[in-house]
Length: 149
Ligand code: RB5
Image (cartoon, rainbow, N blue to C red):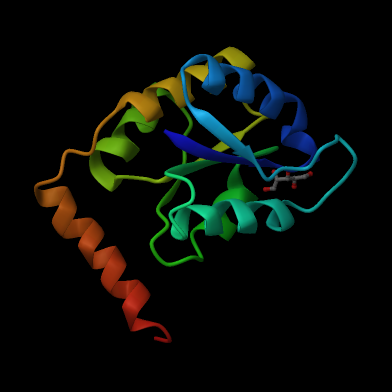
């Protein structure tokens, strides 16, 4: 899979671990994140990563900040993006099965690196269930087309 990653200062350290992990699993990684732990603004990094998914240059994106929240807010402003903040193994699987999420948001200061890698592994390995869930995400897509409300 082609995966975009992005981070702010809070996500910098974990981003490096994540890149190694993804590459060890055979994924290619495009890094749009901050290159240091100096204070930075998460929207600056989320936007190009998410755009690369919309443009089809990457299959999915993984965004990391302290909480995952700001990254998720930015990502979900873009049509076609279904970004999910996950907080345990169950939500990592469920957001793939039910929402076909294409962006994973991680809170680097909320979980251990092992837990974050586990969430990532599950999220990458879990397929979309389709069926009634497709009907529901089609309704999300209809909201994109409806803008402005
Ligand atoms: C930075 O302190 C923090 O606000 C940011 O990393 C992120 O968690 C925002 O949601």
